[in-house]
Image (tube, rainbow, N blue to C red; front, top):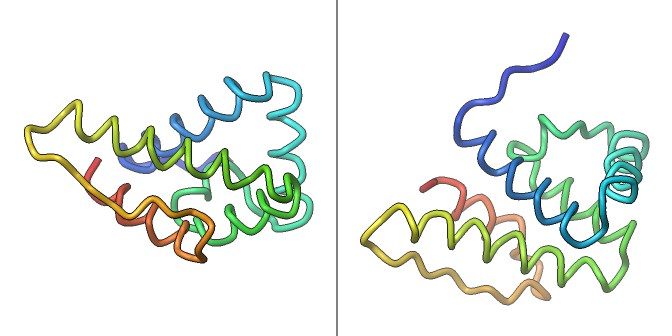
Length: 111
């Protein structure tokens, strides 16, 4: 049985999925999803609720390359919000610090 995502979770997943497919393509994105499922029991429907696990799994799979992807995801979430709002959302986008998951969670709260 597939879990129904809330609109907010769905939007975050759409952004993550789009970024991974833009950078790696369909096949490699599926490999990343399989790694997250196998090693962390994390399905795509769980990404929004377990961003810390998502970040850890991505960093395991991509090593230092994960920081680029994390930064792109965060920037796309911020851009999605800013395109829908007259208020500018500003978050410290230093993903090399351990705050990536909390930055994503903060940004996801407003979309």
